[in-house]
Length: 270
Length: 286
Image 1 (cartoon, rainbow over the protein chains, first blue to last red):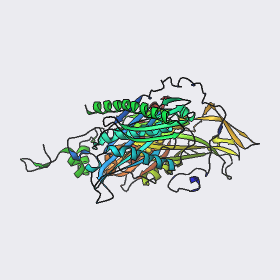
Image 2: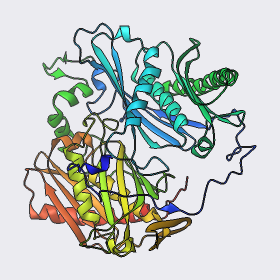
Image 3: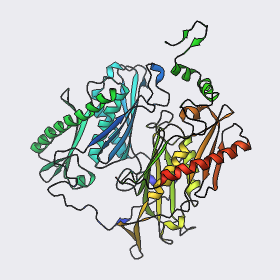
Image 4: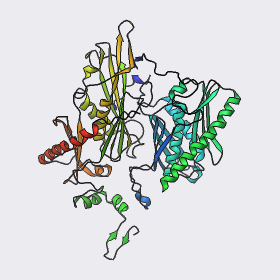
């Protein structure tokens, strides 16, 4: 598809390359009842995060942000998932008469970040789609009316992914932390969490191999203090009752993730 | 002290950050003329460098390298392709450097900028053939070869792209485990066994060292972003395991004397010793 285009600004390999056919199936389905990493069904993988600009030296002067440093940045880990995000802004927007600020998001997978074929450098449709999803999930939390004529840009790169829905949820959490680091005015931090349906059981925060065997996935972005959901995405087949249940459990899990983010942000202020 | 206070002497006194922004050259000169640097390092002192191998589980070979605040992740994906008709035994090594606005405000989103293009190309010339034997990537002559796609993603940028990229790629190549692949001549399919990994024998390892000339007289090792902005000339010296020269690349308009170049080569030898230690078994399988 995109491989026919020769990009002269990069070092190019052969026009077509494929993954070899792997003989040994490494996804042994030994986790029919439990989970492969011994988590309980409603347990989210351990989270690590770090916010902060390039240089640790911050002075009282508003001038201090060096030209090279972003307004805010965050590095986020959840199990094997690793995401890095930089936020720029509020800076001059493209529309000079806009009464509200705008929030733009640029989401990318690093070429080696997925367990299947290498990703092309050229932005794929799914990356564009996820960028939009992230914008829609985060934008309701930002006080855009406080930033007329301005725009806020978030650049997100996935360094390693493990489960598509879980990666998107992690990206939302990562951007939330970076926005807080940049000091953007928000109603609340957005926390996100995903679940997969295996048989009739909901499994929280699926890894890639768990996601491959689940029949339905739900992703929720939630503002716990405001008690408002900013984004829901459901794929696959589930009954309305099951979806209800998933929304319930997911919002509870989001509250727990939110607590982790808040605790981190508080400790980073000291 | 507030900004722009006029002291009794009649001199204008600035807060240090304001001074740094308004007069970057003069700011650096104040330090350099006192035989020191704004980051507290000596002229020939490199930043602390940390190498971790095997950090990305979705790649066949990977590494994370930190040089001070510059952080870079290199991941190698191994895929199969048909060889070039002119070289039926030779596999491919594809190296690309990614500098996105995520790592620094210097870079724009979209297609790779000048720095990224130049670094990718230079890296490719350094490693192809020199370090990786293309024939060791052959699965079946004329039919199937390995394509190693090495992507070097900068997570944080604070100067010295090429040193970071060369060290990261060297470490990732050392970490690389190629699955044992078999070519079926009847079906034309390459099957591979994940459990039977096999490392790649490298012809040599590369040890880079970058030096920058600031203000025409001060030669500093491993310049950070702020120093790089003011450098008039930059010298990259690459040595191999035996301490032999592999590459010298002097760029920038400033002129550099022969003595300075040989001092760079000597200092690169010292740097090589520390890097050798750092590159040894820092594997941390995630």
